[in-house]
Amino acid sequence: MPRRSWVHGVFKVWAAATLTAAAPALYFWVASLLTGDDGSRSYWSMSSGSCLGWDIYELVFLRAYAVVDFPLFSYGGAPLIALGCAGWYLSVRRGRTGLGRIIGRCVAAVLLVLNLPEVLLSSLDAALGPGCTQIWGPPELLSQQFTWMFYDCLPPILVLFAVRAPRRAFVRRGPVIRTAAGVLAVTAVVLLPAASAPPGKVSTERELDCAGFGDDTATRLNAAEKDFLCAVRGYDRPYDSGVEGWDEVSDQDVLAQGRHLCALATRHGGDITARAVSEAPQASLAGALADLCPAVAGAQQAEADRRQAESDAYVAQKERACAAHPRHRPKIRPVRQRRATLWTEFWTIDGWEDGYEGNPPELVRDLVGSGLGTLAIWAADEIGHACVTVESYVRRPPLETRGWEEVVEVGYESPSGALELVDGDGTSVKGLTTRGPGSYRVRVHLRGRELVTQVIDAPDGAVELLVQVFPGTAKKPVVYR
Image (cartoon, rainbow, N blue to C red; front, side, top):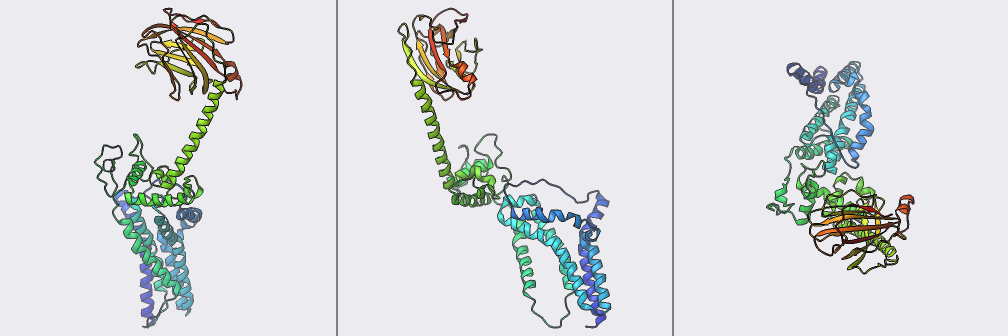
């Protein structure tokens, strides 16, 4: 080939590389002049755990924006390509073709360093799963982003083509060039179709039959998979929007990522708080994992059993302390006497009759209060327990103040004759009223209040209550002590 023809042909490739680099910026510039839309878009992205590709990109390449903003790299690197073309031409004019090839390859290398890592790193995160894919942008824009990333790699490839050594016969390229070409080809073939493919099936709440009122048409899924999808999408609880970021991910992908997270948790004994699990890209699925992963379900059940045994031992210790108190010896025989350890998280234990719950009365001397069908008795300094003795009489018992710090009596109207005391754990003491519906008096004796309000760690069974209920028509409260 004549030298002049060869130079003209190479110039055309340089020109094609320059125009290819500048074309997108020129297009959006013209579009902004005609429509006022410059083509720019912004979005927020969220991701749980660590995504290797994005972490590398954020650590290294986000800091390179100052270099990218340099005028030489504007318009897709077109000024750099034009400068490289001038350097190549001057080298060729002086007979230093090898130097020209070095200049061209340096230009191509700079552009590839700026553009190719984003393709490779986003591809890496796409392989890790949807949780990491979404950090690069909304799913509906991902295929467009891949297309533009590959397009940005086209100008440097044209530059490399322009400065290749002219050969008359086919020459097998070196291993580096063959490997790079293979990676680009495989990435383009595999990832672009995958990114642009339509999303898989996302089953509805009715199809999964989460609340038991659906048609249960998702027959391809077993019960564990349905429960897991219901939990992830928030179908199993009212007013629950599900795990953020997974609502539009197909059932197949959610289950695949759940199984991957299950495998990680299984290797750590089913512990979803293990570092490998909590830092995984799919870590946000951990809260629903027990429905899908037997190891996690087993670990959580074992932890629940341990906590229940610990709670039972704690309650038993308090009950033993209450049982150790001497039994009250009434001065007249009651119809019934009951002893119980009652618990509260809001200062009082409550008494009520059916249909009169939820309307707590005001307390007299911060000890006992009553209303129609309701009763409230102070029992703890906000949270705690009290050792309670309840006595029911058919007539007024003699007054007892000795040994008690506070004694207050109030009137009580029983609409049904079925008053019962109920604590925060559901323990109840029934049979307080002996003559059915009617008027009663409730006398409450207390000791231990001063101790539990002044000592941070009061001894078990410090609060003792004696509650006496007997018929009486008086309405006014009486403070005996």
